[in-house]
Image (tube, helix red, strand yellow):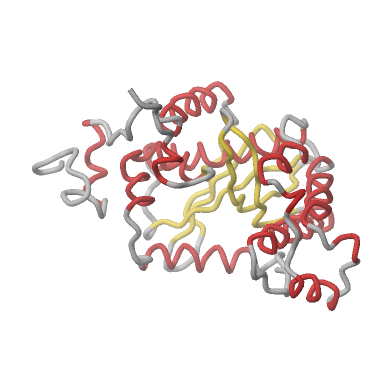
Length: 291
């Protein structure tokens, strides 16, 4: 018998996103098919992307120098994270913060929507768009709650130095990752000092800034906005449930490690298939009429 492949090896990925882990709570099979069956961006997906662009523009100032290589893009992420965290200190909130971490030895990352200081503590906020003013069901809330909770865990792991600059450097091999000459010249032109023109040094500043954020609140917040009007539909605050998250991560990692195949929804939740683009085509887990 050959060595079992992990899902990452089979899917030709080198890391897992927080969104993918959360999506397993809606339908694991659907999550996998989104990876293996690339499809054009839908209208709903574009609306969601446009919404997030508007949200982050309030405080987020992107690096004006365009990256051309992978090290350039990594540097850009660290620079924008660092400037976003400056907004947290100055304005009491920041948006679009890229987080990195490790779960069961797998590289994990995710784009946190917002951090806000409330009563002296940092609140993790996740924004979602929904159709109209639909009520938020428990089935819809569960993956979103997992995603927001995972962001809190990743951020807390950095603050408590369970995941450090050394861990990141080792996982992403940034010691031997010089930025391109053109990118360095661009950084020079906007006044970034020579000593800060390395990926490793910029990530060092980013991790230092994360270490110094205030205590993180035990509550996470999920905000739902109407896709068309952008109006706030619902604001759900939930208490961070570490046992729930740990249990979920333990189960979800069985898929990523290759110990089991992707699971379709349970029979009691096969109503979800009605809105799935893969139902009856790439996925035949539930044949016949779905009710």
